Length: 364
Image 1 (spheres, rainbow, N blue to C red):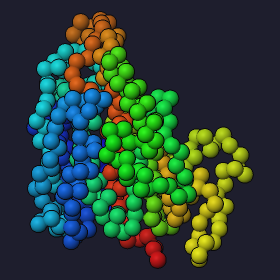
Image 2 (image 1 turned 120 degrees about the horizontal axis):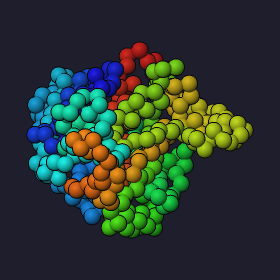
Image 3 (image 1 turned 180 degrees about the vertical axis):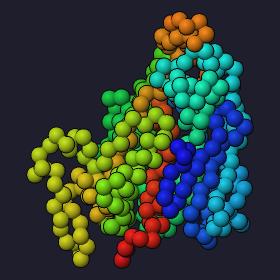
């Protein structure tokens, strides 16, 4: 199924942007784990819309209603099922889009795949709204990983020409990432943050948009997680991360920049420190041969500029069979990367927990 992922831990999302509700079913979570619902709510709020002028003004409470799998605050062993009500839809803003597809949206391709009755109001099942249940499921996974000594944190590495502080690949400052996680723009540098906010707001006023690069670190992972060839850490992470609407690229470690460098610079020499194996560099991003080596996991996710912009754009009419112009109405993020930071954390947590639940992996 295209709306599901996972092997030992399976996640299936359902719903549409302007339907009654969205939600997910998560099967395979360990029984007996206590879920901090207040912490989960705080995590989900990081993704929630309508919290500043540089995000969509669609306001949603994003309060999950658990149907099964959670009893008196503990995971019960049965599949975790929950839904989140949609309460602030403006479907009339999308009336003309049945006839005129939006540029760089899934309107046209979805119609070619499913037919003219496909519901694309607000993006339908393709919408970024579906990242809310991912954050609910991933927020629980983050809590489980933290209990195992595994910490995940991310920041906006770059928006436009504005770049954030460079983080160490060998010893990332996880405290700094945690500190800025609830900022409107999750950048470690306060100067970069203000520049990014100004830039995004300028684009908003112009009716335009931008994208960004999210950088994520995961520490505390043991060596030996993963598989070679087609089922490695990179494989499963990439598959899941590309399920986040707007993702156009995923890179690990030094990524494409490292591909143009010399091997003598990019190699990660081994070293024993206090009886533990480490590498002097971490250009591999903590993964070699599809398997973790015990160093921090490092990955970057590229988010495209928001496709819904207020500028007049060329398109065509199905009914008239003629070219026409389109001006998109509605409430949209001028930079979807801003609210995608916790989504990248959530999806990464779900994939890593899936690997940890694989009882075929030998761990000390």
